[in-house]
Image 1 (cartoon, rainbow, N blue to C red):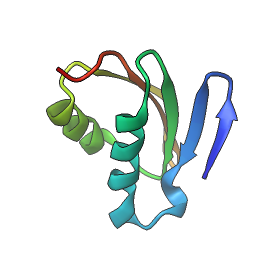
Image 2: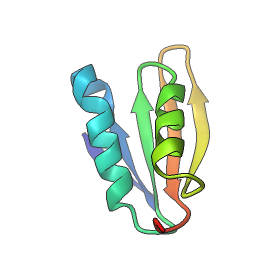
Image 3: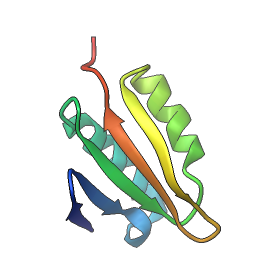
Length: 84
């Protein structure tokens, strides 16, 4: 599911059942070290995930679209700060 791409690992959640995807992504965000990132690969726009992360980790992560569909979305998610 993951491979290395420079400084950011690639996490392709398309192979996971939809019910397990957010759990896996939140696990990865929790494990991220400040200044590190991973690239999320998904089969739909993960914008709802952005709002969930912002609610859980306000101003603690970065979100950058690298590819925006129509069949593949790639988003770089990085850790900006530690939880208060």
